[in-house]
Amino acid sequence: MASPSPRHLISLFLFFQFLCFTTTLSLSSAVTLSSSASGKVSLALYYETLCPYCSKFIVNHLAKIFERGLIDIIDLNLVPYGNAIVVPPNDTITCQHGEFECLLNTVEACAINVWPDLNKHFTFIYCVERLVVEGKYKEWESCFGQMGLDPKPIADCFNSGKGKQLELKYAKETNDLQPPHTYVPWVVVDGKPIYENYEQFATYVCKAYKGTALPKACRELPLEITPKAKSNQMLQVSYADETSPTTKIRSPVTSWRRQMKMTASSE
Image (cartoon, rainbow, N blue to C red; front, side, top):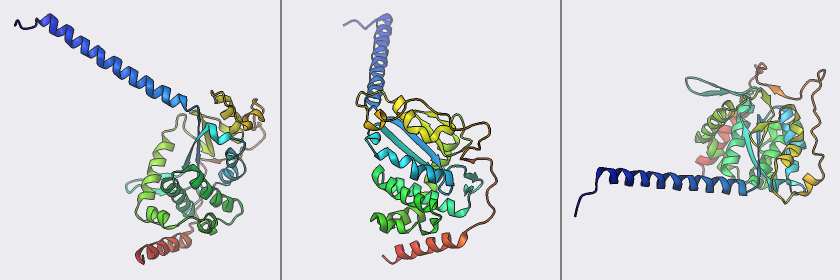
């Protein structure tokens, strides 16, 4: 049997290259179609736990995603890091509103990781942020009992260093934002920040939604954006370049760490 000619080998090689290319393209298209077929609009909130404007937004506005079917068209991503800073060489995290904010940022990051179900971790975060709004954030541990949640997985996440790793991941995600965030709350709908109009996020979500099953919440909303900020009005935000407070609340943080470690060691 005669050996194939070089021209034949080249033709065969090009055919297989084309076959691989078209297969890859088909798979890529399938992934894209699968992603778009979900019909949900991405909604991301970049925030920090003791920012008063973030807390009020979560409690008074974001919680409404669970009303009138709005949650059915939203893919929500909560990123509790905000205007914190990672300081080398040990990747120490400094938070804008002090050490207690770093504690709660990490606790909420752990909640998202430990309870990936949105209904579960949002319920806990809502409880904590409601206490922030009420000026009772030092009572945040009461949310475990109020929500019927076990504190041990959160303590394990926090004490094992997993919580810090989550915060470092959120730091990168926040710092990689394009355009960069300049304040919190920083709300991104369908990949685009909505700046000072963050309280009107639902209107942006409804306008971005491409599906046919429009939820009741969208049918009741005006689809026109009303600019919130005026030239003589201060934005309700915490700017990234604002000076961090110098007061450090060490005792409650230290006592909670000690208490959780003692609980873990006794089991």
